[in-house]
Length: 248
Image (cartoon, rainbow, N blue to C red; front, side, top):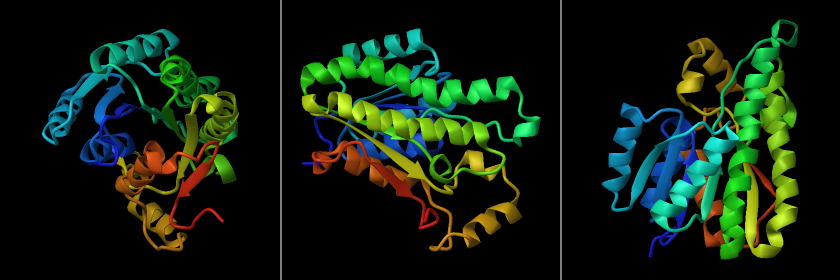
């Protein structure tokens, strides 16, 4: 039996990067997978087919995770389609990097709304079903920047630090119903987002990491598998760094 067989997962921001890697890893380990992104585009369609080819039920949804109404509707649709929801991965996120002196109100609001409010929206919607089931695992995507900060990322760091506080608080609220809430704090991971950085900047980052390389989305997905599975049945309210040792 595969480790996530019999479970249904919902991954936000699932069409690309870390979210895509988690969706694939969940399917490979037996879970049915629903995933969402802002639009149902070619990338979403291709991933849907890729997941189904792994022998599991999979469905892509167009949904704005930063919208409370969209999130409520999404979770209802997933439960109607799959019958239950066992795993929620709050992965939707953006960056709007610049120094605080140049940061606009819009840049601040966009990042907090999409990165942090989305976790509130989806968790509030999904917990209703998980509490009835007396079973569930919620995984929130934070960042090492949310732990240690980073110049030029005050908005992003604030959103990811907020994710940690949110994780620890909700874990205490719903643990008695066997619903677990944990956070993953990735370090420098090679994704479409980091690919936009100049090559010399990426090399500089890698040199600062004890393992001397950037992480891969699959490195984060492996941690997500553990937290989603029954192997982590006694783990809640924790933050797990996946950073090659860069977070000291």
